[in-house]
Length: 297
Image 1 (cartoon, one colour):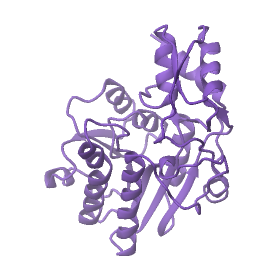
Image 2: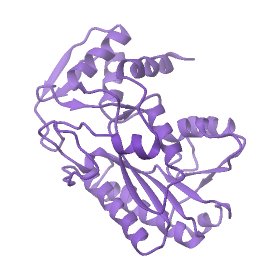
Image 3: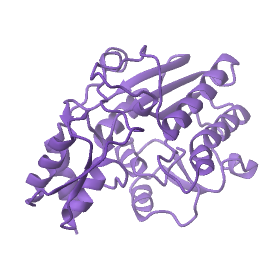
Image 4: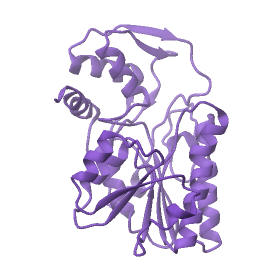
């Protein structure tokens, strides 16, 4: 598992069968407490650290490893180079490790930011990509590196999950995490534009479910739209969170950010048909779980 220090990894570790041998890679040896706790609860899990381009790290991967779950990546970073390093260079390094160690299968966490839509039409795997952000361009470049490795028979299979607005306990990026923090701090929620932008927030437990289903993929590269079960506007997201937290909602309106997609709604039929995956957690329930986790001792 690459990207073991991120928000999704602890949730995934807790959900994997305890009989599985799992190696979680994190770049920094000062591992997050959430990851250490999840590893401790999984008898077959261990942590390895170091740069992904380090040959010594490659040697720490068990010889019988058959799948890498690639969760690493950054939406924002200190520079353009850092965003590209976190998404493109990291993916290149993962693919080189797979080639060197003869690891056949990859599950790659991509993003709905490879698209940008003004119409509110449902996006599908066949919709032409048109990223508007550096992050979207970086993830799309990573996808193309993966497709090239498949084409050259360097790896056998890759499942690419284009996920939409993932949120949940431990999340620190995106509208849901930002709104939650500001509401808890008694600050106005900042909303860009008119607040009527449409999203389909995706709870982390649904992400974990689709990753588990994607771990045994057929040969070749396979892309899936992965999105939450209902459409909500940005304003509705803020209203729902304020209600659950019992806070008064105040909105600080900001100019529309031209780099952000106005709408992101997706057709998840292919994931249902081929992976048997259907998102389960509606937004209000997901926010309630998030709030309960924040208040837990």
